Image 1 (cartoon, helix red, strand yellow):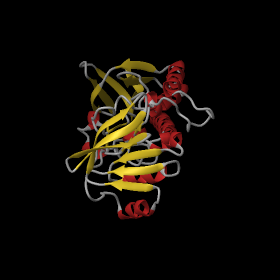
Image 2: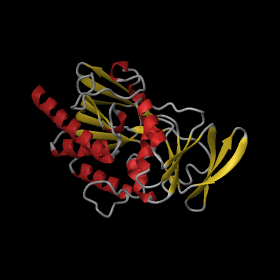
Image 3: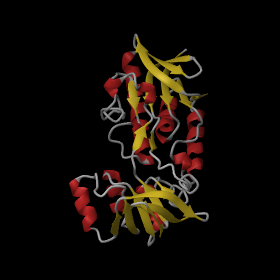
Length: 304
């Protein structure tokens, strides 16, 4: 069987695509290893998604999206995709079990993965004081004290945002920042931001929630109190399945798309955090997924 569309990734972008391709009565298969719902599926409470003024549990929201997608006929395949190729206008999706699926179009929605510190307490307190998204979680820390780890654009941009709610201490392992000059100027002028230089976070400590971090500065250990830790030491796109298609990737491995979410390879689309220019929010990922699905429908209609 040759599917009309193969969607890879069951986060908010992929499931939104599946809802729309299903409603358009396109034969659709969605491939994901766990159906965990991407990063939103790991978020305890989502308060900034439209339509839920009291907030909604992240896994519950993703379960609803999955139910809606399957209601409209999306076929689910639990597995990993190792590679994608295109022959005679048809995409071949190579899975880790050796099987090959074929589709007329493909929507990649595999997201990105936050680079983690890999220190004690990071996983334990994820969602309980450890975060990688200021716009998602900053409002929970009104009138608190926070630690931001990193020295690049993301760390300063998100750190500045967090000062709307809390006092911020930026911990950087070097003696100078890597961020753009304009962000540095804004951060240095912000009275609610403090800097700790030449230091690395060695451990995140607490009891049910974050209470402090252990720093190593010039060989000496120091513990400082904090209500939360926001980590910005980079992220990487989950684009390994298209590493053989360098023409669609930027220097960091993110997929290049036009405003219709189409990559330079016709019929291959990308939606959500995986693509260049994503703002990495659930709402924008949903919009990306819908846009890609509508363009898939148009392409298939015009090819008939």
